[in-house]
Amino acid sequence: MGIGWTQRRSGGAAGCIARAVALGALFFAGPAAGQDAVPPITKSDYGLDLFQGPVTTASRVVGLAGAYTALAEWCEGEYSNAASPAVRAPYSVGKREFDLCLGFTNPGAFSGNDFENRGPGFRSLPTRFTNAATVNLGLQLQYGPFGGTVNYDALHVGLEEKGKPTDISAVIERVTGSLASSFANGQLLFGVGFRTVAFNLNQVVNGDETTLVSRTGASSQFGAIWMPKGLPFRLGGTLRSEIVVREIKGITENDDGSQVAAGRILPSHLTVPWEIEVGGALELERRPFNPPRVDIAALEDEVRARYDLKRLERATRYADEIAKAPEVTRDVLRRQLELRELRIQAEEDRAMGREFERLLAAEKAQAALWDRRQMLLLASVLVTGPAHGSVGIADFVAQRRASSGENTVVSVRLGFETEVVRRWVTLRGGTYLEPTRFVDGAPREHFTLGTDIRLFRFNPLGLFGDDPWRIRLAGDLAPRYFNWAFALGKYH
Image: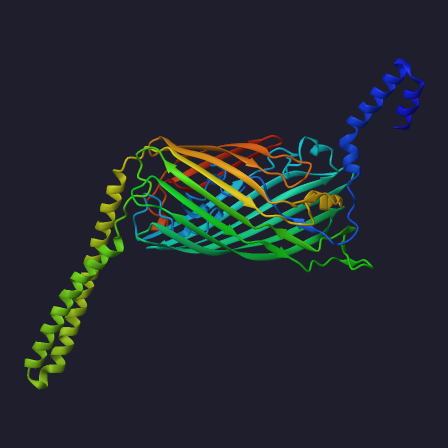
């Protein structure tokens, strides 16, 4: 400013040129100057914002751009709705059902992904993400209207500091689980569960590893889904409460009580923000979306009642025979009748089992005749709460007090799914808006694509059911970000 003022007073073209050069220098130096102006962390009076913007959970959820809270089928639905364990997919007709999830995502497919959505200037920041990978596995068990699901996933990300020979990695492990049940003939579903997070930040210098932060916390989650029978839509919503972890201890302590590890001042707390998600799903084609479901348990009860009546009639007849027999022979007759009844009941149990199998086979055959033409549209809105007084992971590593999570943010998600080759290939895709947690950032749009490809049947010892296996692929592309996902499971 002093140079500009001096030249302006001298006047002439030289003054104009000098002022233009000075303004240009200020403009182009703006981002760097802004970064240098970020105050350093000097004490443990801040938090760490564990917000995750990109969708990095199960591959079907990635392919559908995260718009899964109303669909919430199978064990990957646990990531989107706590009522998911009670959801029965259209072709799930048995009284008992189970599902396995096993997948891998690579949101750090290209080194230098802008994982925190810092903006086009993220490469000039003193710390940036270098790679990331997620593994997830889960199990869902269903019996009648009840269900339970437990999922585990671990996100491993690497970070690098400019000009420093350090190797820093952050590992976020989550375990989520819920129990749910359906009511009103399977039209209303409610679930309650938990979510836990374990956060570990490690630094390696010359082969020596130091744990900077290692903490675990937990909170609750609740969900609901409306599946009106015979209608082609669903509505769902879920609430995940905030996780706040305090009492973070370092290796040393400053005079002001701040905790320190490996030369870094640690935060006073970690925050996984609360989330509210609502969404809907609409089936445009002929596939039954919420079909009236035959109650297999009720049919089995009818079969049992028929056999129980026969057993009651025999018991009455046995009692008459014993009463009419001479007293000296009654004990022998009673033992003979008991042995006969045991043999008859064993045969009846086998017969009931065959009838149960026929009932289930008939329902599966009926479901196999349903029209599979499908065009499913999905939408959801995810609202994520604030984490006041916090910074992001990269800024913690760089010890910069760049505010993260001061405001509530919203993510809008849209997806579609269709079976392009009947019983063999399913295609899905979508788009979602990833919000930013930084005041100088901006939301960015993601585009996703995914597919299921049927493989073969594999059912050793009858453990995995009759459904064929499939391979599932998904991709997520956005400015400064790319993720691909892979999973194995059953083709339904």
